[in-house]
Length: 216
Image 1: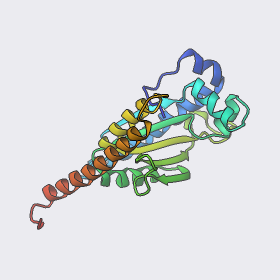
Image 2: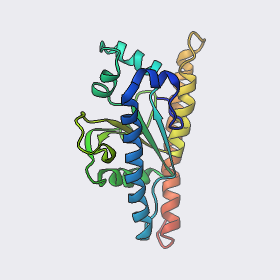
Image 3: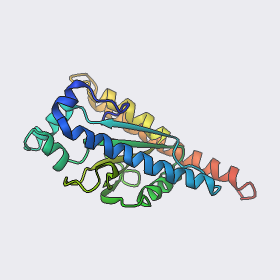
Image 4: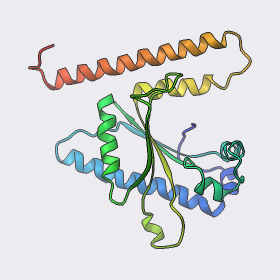
């Protein structure tokens, strides 16, 4: 899934129409609440588990293709009401253990309602992809009690290393009709496994540094 700065081109404005404010609003509301949770964490002497944040509104062409593949009406209403990734946030964490702490912060946001969670870290995809996914919604304060359905947000949590692999794999997988396709898939999977091993090693190093009296 493509992620970029929170900007909407004319194609997205044309497709999402008045619903674009809802997608932008759920992202901004989530980041505002999460930012407060992170500051409270630091003020209490604990580490901020999040290194960086990326956001995106799903591109109109990508959303139209997804709706068509699923046999859904190619409309903004379908995009907001029948699929859950029109708005997305990616949280990048330094270490594997930080992902669990970041998930706990997300769950603690007042008013948050989580529809679904998928742990692709403990259960990687066959190609080696690792990440933690959450689909959630929360009240949009700027709209008050106006009558609209829930606005869903997809949140992905990854380590820096996982994000590096996924970004490269995303670029490579769109190359079609090339020789040695099976070899490339195997090599990408091998790289993903090596990165996962490196993540665990880095986590161990961190724990040794934070507890210098611990036996190796």
